[in-house]
Length: 243
Figure 1 (cartoon, rainbow, N blue to C red):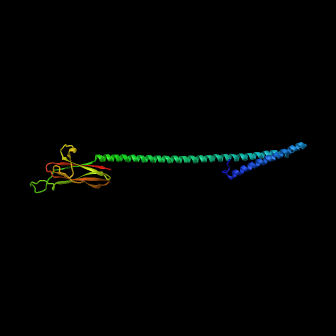
Figure 2 (cartoon, helix red, strand yellow):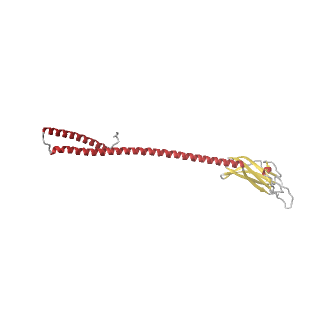
């Protein structure tokens, strides 16, 4: 048994109880031998002599009670020590479980964020492949001059506008597709495509597009000129980009 963790009063009680028991046993043996000798000699046994063993037995009872109490306290301290050890182990296990749960939660959060980012990137990429479109209706050219005078529109006097499509700020423009068709035409856009800088029935797009910031996005713009005096036109741009 390990008595090192017992308190000083408890140790003193146990030592005192053991000493009392030892002394009582020695005294009881001495009294018994003395009584036996007196009987052999035929001497009468006095009350004092008879009282001796009773006192010894009483001392044994007291010592046993003290020793029992000390021993019970010892077992209580053992149980308390075991309980403290078990509590510490449980606390350690709970801490490990909490740490593991936090790591798993963080991993799930990171995985969810990664999935959301990939989904957003895929959506943005899909939108970039489809492109951002913008169109405008341009009326026929009306040259300025003397009222009633007959003047023709030229490219120098043409109505000039800028068509802009809005794309994400982080987008890289891959291609700007240009289209021109009559306002009342049912012609598919694929058949109305034109090239930048080339004339298309008295209309022309600028040679290059430009970019300009627009808050948390940006605009991709293309200049357009129409010098036809007979019909309105629809000018359309389709900006394809990558994130």
